[in-house]
Length: 136
Image 1 (spheres, helix red, strand yellow):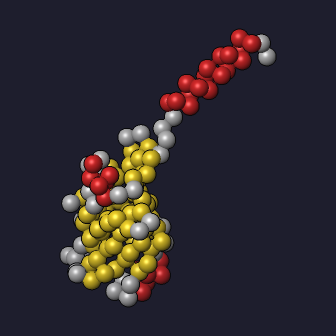
Image 2 (cartoon, rainbow, N blue to C red):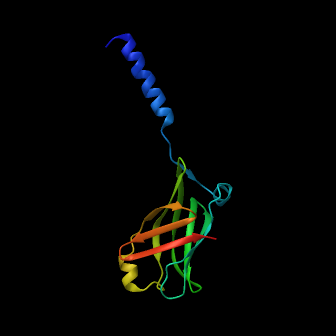
Image 3 (cartoon, one colour):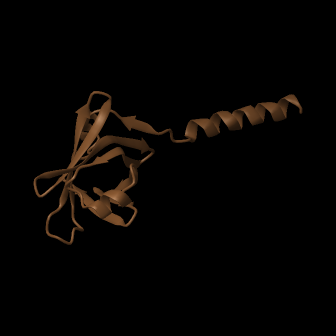
């Protein structure tokens, strides 16, 4: 390969690498709020009139979440909010369900759920369960 072609190739890789979006994960509720991301989410698609409410909090190893329904704890685990370009994706992982979650739902619920935040809305789905949440 000639020195000129090699120079162009290096230039293309350098410019191409600079334009790729790198995912940046937010590590605190303060960072979420600074980016306009809500720390409280309420289900809008429930069919029983009792929305599941998700609360994001600072934990010892990063963000955590807890979810409750009708004042009873349902789920807890780790939460991450990662940005790539203009898109933000939320991931709820290491999910633990309490005895308040119906057995069928508990058995079908995956330990990790992930979805993009679009217009202050999250559409989570896992197994037979689906829910749409809005930021509060």
